[in-house]
Amino acid sequence: MTVRASPGVRVKVRVAATGRVLARAELAATPLRRLRGLLGRDGLAAGDGLVIDPCSSVHTCFMRFPIDLLFIDRDGRVLRAAENVGPFRFVSGGRGARRTIELPAGTIANAKVAPGATLALDPA
Image (cartoon, rainbow, N blue to C red; front, side, top):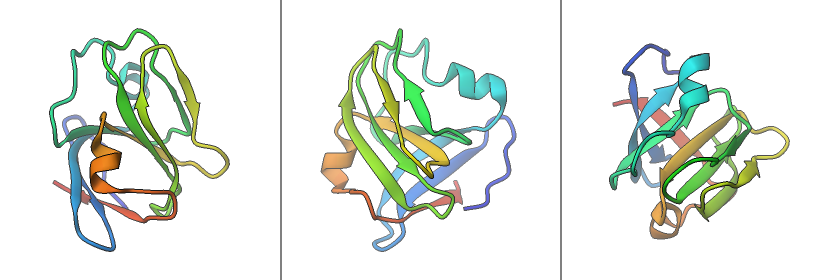
């Protein structure tokens, strides 16, 4: 799960047990990038995403589209999955959440990812 944070870094988010790739995501690891998140965008294309590190809770204030959220601990274990989260919501990953993965709405249901699954973040 070690990926160096620098501008423009993308990571491959995959289910460790199956190797299924959920997204090729941007890494938001600087304070400014974490603050901005997905604000100002019109949507996420299928297969895209954003990994926010560190991040244990998010808001969707002023967002224009719903998203799926995966909150993972430092070992990549999914602690919470929140599907189809609409604008102007606040969601916490709970105790132990270290990173948040923002995905296009429907990704979690399609991939059948649930709490307890382990995800891997690899250089894309």
